Length: 376
Image (cartoon, rainbow, N blue to C red; front, side, top):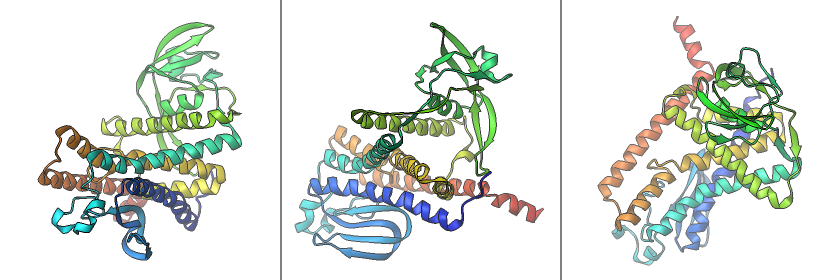
């Protein structure tokens, strides 16, 4: 078991991993807004009191906040950093042509969408560079061995079988198979295999195991009980780098969506939900392992940032996109009262989510066990 990285490395790695992704996200909003002629009052990395900043010739205040856990662009016409609408009378007549909220719904939709889209583009470029430098990791879905007593053996899977689909989803590599199974402990799944050219169908209930990574972190995952063949780094032709990187990004996003749905549907415990503290620890751990591991983590963080912001929750980009879509269909915006209550509900939900995630993180680090021992 490897030793946990020092706190200073955790902090630096977390900021180094998340900082550029936040900047990229907000620049996506900013540049598309400029393309449509929308002005920005402020571009902030972090929240709270301004630590440093400057004002450019367009009147935009570029600044760094005291709490470096996010960022925002405040456009002309915004009442606050969450892009709630300022009353039209409060916007100077000379600036109304640059107001975000006086633009057509489709332009506002694209400006908001540009932030998460930029995060996905960053991940694609990282994956493409990784594949170009070291190749694309790939293990065939041919079973080399079956663990005795495992769900695979009980289902009838044998060494030499090639797994083709799980739950109707095509499986192209052992890595994809492992990700699929790990997210589904104790779940019954239909499996299609190829045995000597003959297609066969099985049903397996995945085993549930508690697994520790090399740093001692515990995870509850699903397990089929099969071993794959040797992993190889496959050379990717230059023209295939971006398409393969897009596929890797889509697969990672789908895994995140699967994991979130399992928590929402109750198939996974809400205790599996991690927050900023655990993200920081993971960043420090990956940084201590090497450059490639850390860069790969940045790609995953970028996808995570884009994915979370697309969730249809008021206060997040996805919530704005839903409101603009409704406005485009109805040909008029939602009432101020509806928007106000939607944002209040979204804020309450996000605060509750942050509290739960932070509570889980503190428990993950052993704080609640220590408190229990003190009380006992």
